[in-house]
Image 1 (cartoon, protein in one colour):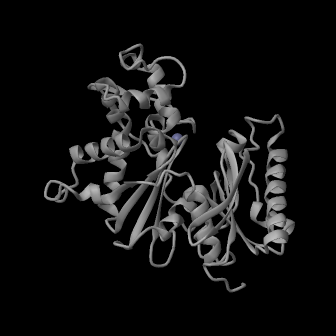
Image 2: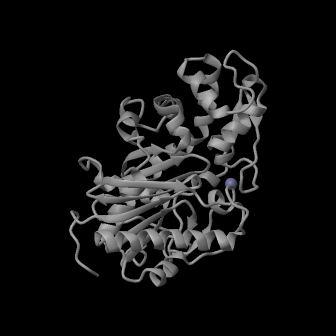
Length: 349
Ligand SMILES: [Zn+2]
């Protein structure tokens, strides 16, 4: 592996369902940002095999150009896809390829397509966790990234070593969106189906799509003074929340309660996670109101022997991400600097 200081720029990609973005990253600073609309099943009639080939072509073309013009020797890709974090195999991506499950060995194909570049390929939540390595002073042994958007996922990282623990056999960690939850709304049980097809998973109530489905369904959200019926549900709901509409705030507490419960379990089982940083489309839309609602629910549940004695406990431990949407690029850049070759072997991809 080529020794590289953190001052040498690396090329970072953030591949999501809406945009493909690339940038140069040095010490967590992002420059030369470029983006193009995502190549996905929503924007193209190509089948999944062709969409995957077009993604590969895009990455290789941009990387070769950066290598030729700028002398870049390392590139890192943050990919919005389910991946085996140990082997690096891409398993599926609902935002890019819809419900298809077509395993894709993108890492090997990148090495074949642009072999003079050292490649890192990681899941986007893993990249968000890695971005925490360049955030301020370290006050705890571990931190975590939590993303709440079309799906929900959580990832812890050890701040001293950069190690991200994964299941040694299946390469997963923190897929909390598919945990079972029990939800009540105004004292009656509420049921909802998750995108994965199973009833009453966390994502069915707390993801962007889950929230929009509930806003469309719950009579209390319809045609009220909050004006929550019709299209563009999430932005309109966010406006009602920010305007202080009482019904919208009550619904917001409903949408954060199942997640608050999961985070409370996590706080109990892994107290070394000193900081959890929230990002994703739902958090970006609702901003501080979302964080406050989540903490309100965590306080209401209570963390045994801690939160009633230490009312600032969750304030210290939960925070919003910067909100500039660049953390996945930062994190990918950090991982590229730390050395591509060892990444998946250490189980940090
Ligand atoms: Zn599910």
